Image (cartoon, rainbow, N blue to C red):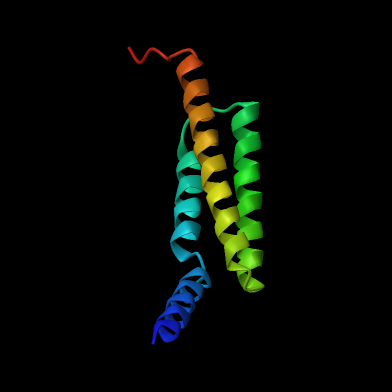
Length: 102
């Protein structure tokens, strides 16, 4: 009986680990879109944004190959890079001279 429970537990863990990272992909796409919409530009923000887009593409390719752990990792990387791009864009926008609307 114990052996059966262990086998079922292992199968359950395996089943959870082999699902496509749908939420992570969605979060990465949202972070990239948000970063693109922010005002401000800098070389660093552009570099981070390109890295985010590349990581998202690599995640999509990994999903096609059913390499879900790699896809999850790349999706998380894409989100982190997009968030870094957003921080750099916000910093660049706050450093830019403000227009007077009077």
